[in-house]
Amino acid sequence: MSTTHEAGWAHAPGGLRGPSWLREPADPNALVPSLWSGTAHKVDGDLVVGGMAVADVVAEHNTPAYVLDEADFRARARAFREAFAAYDVFYAGKAFLCTEVARWVAQEGLNLDVCSAGELTVALRAGFDPARIGYHGNNKTHPELRRAVDAGVGRIVVDSFDEIERLTRITADLGRTQTVMVRVTAGVEAHTHEYISTANEDQKFGFSINHGDAFRAVQAVLAAPGLELAGLHSHIGSQIFVTSGFEVAARRVLALHARVSEELGVELPEMDLGGGYGIAYTTQDDPSDPAQLATEMTKIVEHECRALGIAQPRLSIEPGRAIVGPAVCTVYTVGTVKPVTLDGGAVRTYVSVDGGMSDNIRTALYDADYSCTLAARTSEAPPVLVRVVGKHCEAGDIVVRDEFLPGDVAPGDLLAVPGTGAYCRSMASNYNHALRPPVIAVRDGEARVIVRRETEDDLLATDVGA
Image (cartoon, rainbow, N blue to C red; front, top):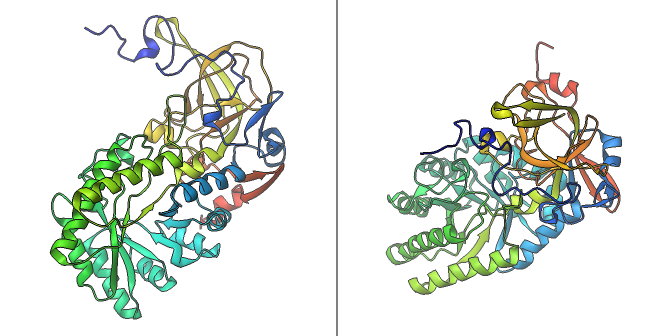
């Protein structure tokens, strides 16, 4: 019979200990390098990123703010391009996209994956070559598809029979031929949160391989006069650390690839294995580097192609989080520090900052874990286990669920949270009418705004009664 308190480990006898993977640090001021961008380090307590003290960035741009290490972003993009040299590498813009980042992606030789009309607009505004753009989405409207075809998007990943019909009408109307890929569902349970697992049968994406929809979708595309089928597309989820799921997916997708060749007499030239490669948010995470991923993924595909007796198609991948995630930290100002006594006498220290779920919804949405550090001073105080929370009117407004900070953390301190480049700004909201933070790119000791902070005028611009 369990002796654990019904409210969980936090209320169990012995007080607060934190999750089993979290260890009390010998020095709560020190950075864990694997969690931070490549240029991040501390100098006399000051967090320095891109050659610039974060405190100096804050002095000019205030908090909260996303600080983007440009050199780190570019280095990770190059690492994927070089490791996967035999592949087409598409940066997944949904992780984070703005016009400047789209330009960096192009300059580093990557293609770009978009999944909405807005993301396509940003890409085109940045001057990104539309022939190097892939367009995703499970519910692309007729106007969205028409615009993509008219713009000359390189490939559209079709996700439903309705979409195939729409594209057929559009290409006929425009007198165009559009290259497409068919997104398939491989029936793989990725080891990740259910909301970001995308290859199991019971979800909205793709055509099921197991139930025959994928093969019928291939037939429908091949029968459509304005569509040219490049190949099959598979994506199993996000924040994945092991390649076993990719292995199962590749086996099933390649089996369908072989069936298309055998039964329909069509050799599909390409296959896309998606993205979803995990990053280190805390010390419990151990991601693979691009070279290791490339070796493992290539071995999987080569083995399956040999087993099936088929030629290997040209492969594509779509890293997003793995490029931009570690390149960004979010900087906040502490507003209040509140010790709260729990049942049994344990004390939890709540550290409230000037942001929260409006700039990082992932903790509330996915139970995501993060780390943090004091960003502008050194402390001699012993570490204390804290919970960093936001300023919104929700009990679930948590930024960092459990972390050790110096025990003298106080109002006015700067806190920096690493690994916030992926999805934090992309999923940011105006909840409680919060203003979304700016994105500040830092490089070689200089900082520049690439997405400005929202203003109250922005907030009122769409309010027709204002």
